[in-house]
Length: 453
Image (cartoon, rainbow, N blue to C red; front, side):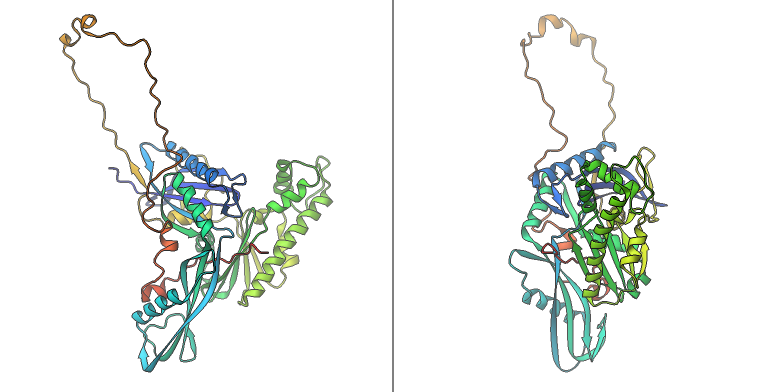
């Protein structure tokens, strides 16, 4: 067996599915394989709509990455996804004592179990994770109550739920690719871990990812993730509105990317610059007004807004941000400095390795690949007498022989078990944490379903 540790990361997006393989080196992560494919409608707003086509896409990405390596077989992957399938519901558990009692981890364990028992997910949804918030005792709100004596404690929880059908569709798609899931994460939480500083989280901020079909708003305050909302609007809405001016989707996308907002007029443009500016301004304003509403509706103190995602790369978008979000400190963060380098045989674009993919590669700890060591061929001496009188001893071969068809590298469907009763490891298992983990390792993955908007 080989000694290398390969981490496989797969990001499920609304516009494309991307995969990367990384290795830990002395100077950071080394990217040794990469592949991506457009979704072409079989994933919409981050939700798998066509199971077969998504499975075929994953299979293609896995095969392409394996082809970039030597004698390596991908068996597992760390996965990040988002979209409209997740949302959060708050709950509270209280506990009283006859006399002052010091809070110990076991008490927190009991309250977490009680929350699991009393919380009921809405019909058609499945509870997948419990995220601890602050606790209130002795009239004070604290992040860690361990060691504090009290007669009464109140703990707040954020329960993540997901539509059961969406979960099944995503699970089946990965099963088709014959790849087990090591762990699954909310893409926004992974991205925030890479892009936000401790000061950003502590002082109150919103991380806004303007994607292709959705815009995700993650709100942080007092160092904790407080709210995550997915708005069903993205930069693709701009492209569609431009298409209404009787141009192709490809041409509309080119105008959006390369011309952008408030650019100089060009006689070669198929649409007047004034019309382009009007369409972009209207759509961006619609997105930003939704972002502003969600920030205000959260009732959290937000001092700064950090924009990321493909939509944040729109030319001259700063003008529209300042017009619609006055009063906030605004920052665009589309290119980040991360510590990775690329294998000399790979040719990647500057933004191929997204913050989410990089974050998955950093989180991954277990080897996801099997190295197949092929023994060198050895020469064997053949006695000269072995082929003596071969014409007399060799029977006649049949005139026709059935062709031998080699098996495909990776089948489209697989009956391989994905590691137990629950498909997604860390994201959906272990709903009850130990007391110390409860207070010290607060998970930063939560979402709110906005399909009804």
